[in-house]
Length: 323
Image 1 (cartoon, helix red, strand yellow):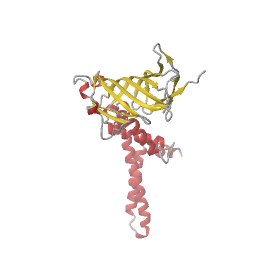
Image 2: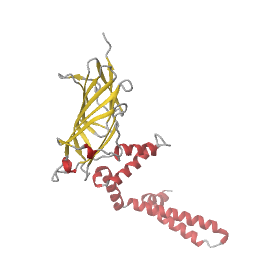
Image 3: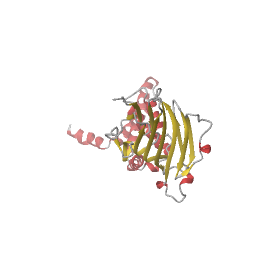
Image 4: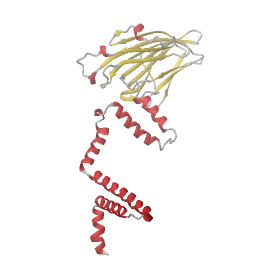
């Protein structure tokens, strides 16, 4: 028995791939030598088995080859450690494969729908830019009836253009449900923009405005693509019926790094902030401080914290009870 292990078993274990190839050739040879029609079925068994074993042996040799292993490792390393060298479409397709694989275990019947939504929301949305140092100020004036509020919202931020975008475009849309947009101004690098040329008149309505601005002229050609920054300021004034909507809903549409909100309202009324969307917030974001000018301030994210598209907040307007 020892001679069997020494002479046959150990060599086979040490050279599995070659052994499979030799066995495959032998089985095929036996199948070819069987010429009798009465044993045609046996010939097919030997031929098919031999082909399968031979194919397995060849594949095992390829897998064991240093060249194949090196190429395979380089492709994997490229995807994970050097994604910049992979074009956007290819990177997204590979992301979808991995995401589908994970979501299959969570929602087997709808994993494709879920990954598609994630892709559209975070990867295939308009990713020309993101915001940093986002600061939103709301002055809320309630009329004597306590029913109609006039809101002046001023947003200031640094608009950071994505390094991979050759022709960046600013796309924004603003929706007011119960009232209407009374006025709007847009400043880029302190230059007032002509909204008559920026607003998409084919889609915009009195309470829903679509704005599109070419950003290429706001960054000098010699500027490094990783350092293209535009000072963004938008002022919008709108009215709202508090009997229908006693709240102001703000949805974050872009990746935003660092954000703060401050509000001031007519005496006799107060404002509370409630977070919405993904539960990816810093602690104590709903805790407010009052400054010397009477503004109530909330810090949604410090300069190093990232808010994601789909997060947002609701400012709830309350009429104070008389003492």
